[in-house]
Length: 72
Image (cartoon, rainbow, N blue to C red; front, side, top):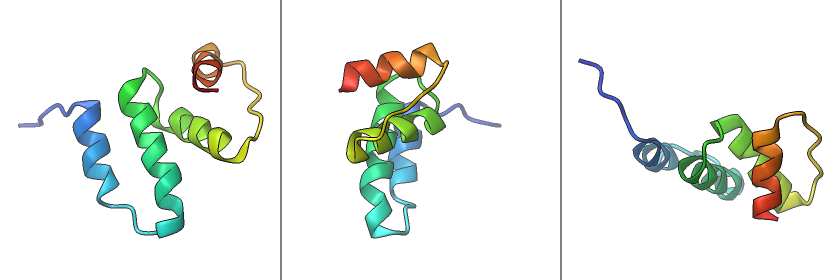
């Protein structure tokens, strides 16, 4: 039987599987954003990278842009 996992449990389990130390911070932040929002993981990773690097994200995705505004 396939069990449905919560976003929180997925993010906690995924955090344990991150192999590279220098990527861990961005991935941890992305997993945190993913578990706290309605964004998908890829968008969460984009937000985390933008926050850490100061990069500008240009997108037509309103959900993504709203989350960026909220985080910055």
